[in-house]
Length: 256
Image 1 (cartoon, helix red, strand yellow):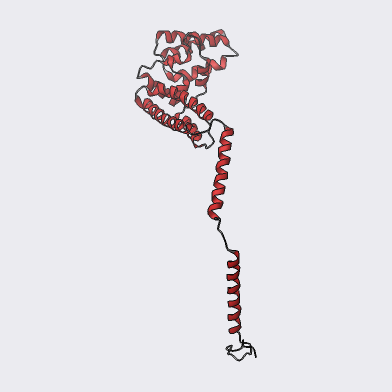
Image 2: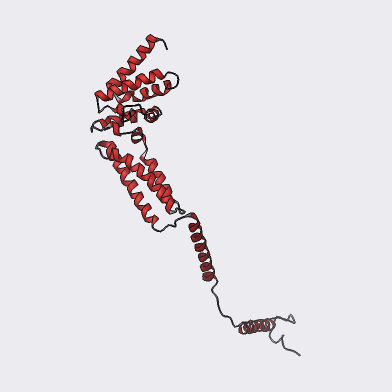
């Protein structure tokens, strides 16, 4: 880039940053990421501009882009450069600005993270029937991190704060369910398998006993009873058979 054009370019970026308007944050972050490898001088200049703006205005949302020591936070700039819903991001920044939020303590993750996605992951874990204590501890750790992020926004007022408090409450409720479940689940997968196998065996045995209960049978009586019924049937058949074809079976079974 020619020197004159470079000066105009950097001057324009400087003016954007000095306005403190969050609507330029996405553009600034993309310019930084674009020039990071090809034009490190531009990145260095942008970093100096950000530092001067945040030093001048401690409440500037551009503080998100800096570490506590004033150096550029590459992760934050990278995250903001990837935001697709810029309008929503800017709206959140402006909403937070109403409550004197210290943007140096807020990360882009706090602003662009989706509480619903975190809840969906928690609910999916709660639906599993093969959770061990270690699994639950891992989920609890993830949820704890989510609560820390949501808590930053939940602590303020406005629509963003209200939404964050709702997410905070739901995650807390899910965590409570996990803790109760943790009290009854096994320590590891092997113990879980043993429990499942024992349960299946028990259920199988119960089902067989219920469907086919054991009964003591007097075989001789049953056979005698069946023979008697068979003889009665044969006798009735003979009595009702019209042996001579005269239309009257009566007496046809008598021996002459």
